[in-house]
Structures are given as structure tokens and as C-alpha cells.
Image 1 (spheres, rainbow, N blue to C red):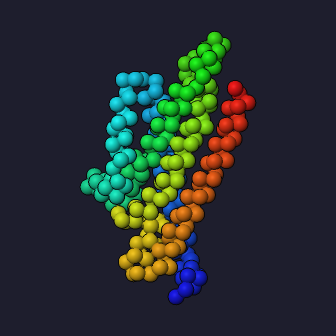
Image 2: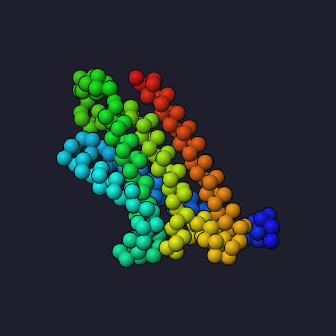
Image 3: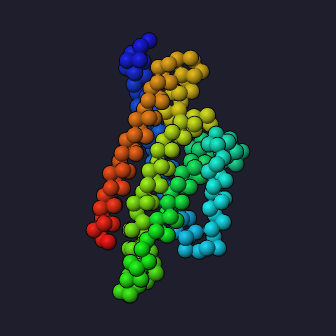
Length: 211
């Protein structure tokens, strides 16, 4: 069966797995972004909590398949067991860039904001995070591209994604599902990367205008 014939015959399955892959990416990326920014802000603001950075570094250094395997006894096989390791893998680049971005904000801008009567929370939300946005978005881009590829591994614990096609191709020694699964994953990674680059450029322009 040719690649075109395979695509026509299994088109519905391919579309279904692609949608599931995108949904899994969306949930894991949003969760990692929220947690990554939150942990980055906390570790930047409170020096006593900077021990979180090496903890996350250790988890980040752990291979994805190992995290997925460890999660099974505690979270079971399925989406919950897949999402937690994905959150962990996606957090570090965002957390690191959040901390770096906040540290790189011009102190004069912060002092000027405080001089205008802004509270510390307002300074954080309207000055520091806004000015650190390009750096934070760069971390989100790294995290997003990584998650798109890592999600293919969730097929090993029974979660359907484009990785399911890759596993089928390996198991059956069939190049068609292998090429489709890996090809669509690569396309998704490129699309996600370019989308965040656009947002990143817009954020840089906005910060430039504000500055």
C-alpha cells in the first residue's frame, strides 16, 4: 500500500489521532506555562524558595520515558498519567526564562513605577512581567516545541496521539504510519514554533514602545 493509499484508507484515524495530539499539547502547554511562570515569579521574589530551581532541573534531566513509567504506579495508565510528566518537562524552560526575564528588567523602570504610587503587585503585573514578556515567550517556545515531540512517547502508556502511528509503524515494520506520525509531529512543531515567534515579536515591539 502506497503512502497516499494509506492516508486515504486511514484518513479518519489519522485525523482523530492528530486532534488528540493537539488537545494533549494544548492542555500540557497551558498547564506548564501557568506553573512555569508562577514558579519563576515566586523563586525570583522569594530567595528562600530558589531551591525549587535545582529540583526542577533534576526532574527536567530525567528522560521523558522514565517519568512516564514512574507515573504509572501512582497515576495509572491514561491521560492523567501522561499529563503530569508533560507538565514537569514543560515547566523548566518557562520557569528559567521567567526568572531571567524579571531579573533583566531595568531597575529604573521599576523605581519610576513605584514613584507613581503603584503597589508591588501592580509593578509585577504591569511593569516587570510586561517587560520580561519577550524572554518568557522565548522559554514558552522552547517548551512548546519540546512538548509536541515528547507527546509522541505517551503512546507507550496507552494514550492515543501521533505516537500511536509511530508505534504501529515500528511494530508492523510499515513505513507509512511511521512517516505520517513523525511527519505530522514535525509539522506541528514548526507551526507552533512560528506562531510563538510571531507573538514574541509583537511582545518585543510592545515592550519597545513602552520603554
